[in-house]
Image 1 (cartoon, rainbow, N blue to C red):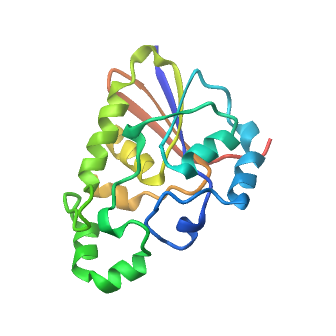
Image 2: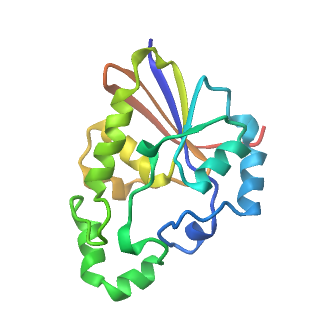
Length: 190
């Protein structure tokens, strides 16, 4: 049997609008409303998961998914940059931001590197059994980028070239560790 995985990005919240490294802030009422408006586009799934962040858990709930939080789907650990805007970090640590944006193994913030994130997400992805059937996960955009890079066997730096918009679905299908990708489909109101 083929695994059919749908990765859904969460509704926007304040951190996303402020271009701030997420600090596990809540999903605001506008984000909840946007997710509820497209809930009919998300079909039932026997296996539903979510990143443990409040934003992803609340998005999954608003989409009508009884999703189980998984640590493997946590967003990239950003260390001391957590909660700060990219502009503020770039002003204070220009060399660190430059290294982070150019070297997938760099973790100048003291957290997790892009490569470490991709490996962690890849282990989860490859651990989905061929008999899993349909799987849905609401996950942070960086987790979805990591899954796409892993599924395609692309270089880690490719993640910086992938845009994951709020409330979009990326579909991966495959078996025995071989994946096909269909990406960037916006969830539409039903």
